[in-house]
Length: 307
DNA sequence: CGGATTTGACCGGCGC
DNA sequence: GCGCCGGTCAAATCCG
Image (cartoon, rainbow, N blue to C red):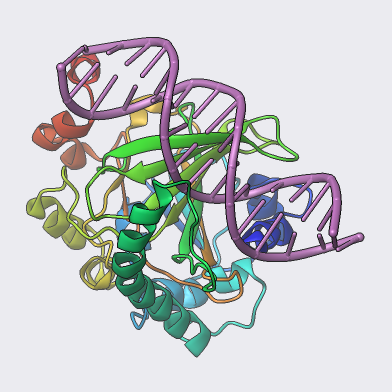
């Protein structure tokens, strides 16, 4: 839709893939690296990403954190690229462009959507006259990369695929998903990196208006407990605090537990650190694996048995 | 049978 | 103005 975003993406990527971009373009830009093997706690991706507007945590820390750069396919590693870094902007994690843009995008849209959607759905069914004047405003987007063999990663929410398109400059199609919960207009697109087919690029758009159907409170607490202030603040403040991006280890290449979030922001220049949180299951994180009750919600039972 | 997925058509925005 | 492209719709199909 917004060509701009496509262009932004392309601007960001150039002719290369996200992975190239991530691993090459900003090797020294604020990168979180949470290793499961070392002393570092396996900080859940969820917690890392669940950052909202005025919340300083993630991107603030992204700027302050020591830049530990590791190869993309470092085992059991979560990387978060600072959006500021991503766009090669001055390190101003709390800059107005970040917070204002994100809140605007979110708040505006949630209001508009109600309004427009009604309108829209009435009219659309009669041969889609669609919106007239108003440019459609898009929700803030947030993309990240996951090294995974499966395209559609479980994230605790239920998604319905509503489209698939071939992507220019890529031999892999892009899939479009929408949250199945009524009144929740979160969307996500999933595509594979052209240059590195093992990398899945997931782009979320919008905010869930409901808790994750598979996310128990205890997990949130546990997540907050596991990680320090960053996660607690992040999970609490985020509209997506309840969202869970799970990446069942059994889906992934043993060496490929890599997630590289990219915040695309509302228009590419402003960044919205809203949302998705990822809870990852590292082989060493036995405690995290205990909650089979949860797992059963999102992981087919036969997979659990295989563990 | 109901829900999810597939897939071709359609639409709007943007660049040339 | 035109063509390209991303995003969405919706009928057809699949699947449990």
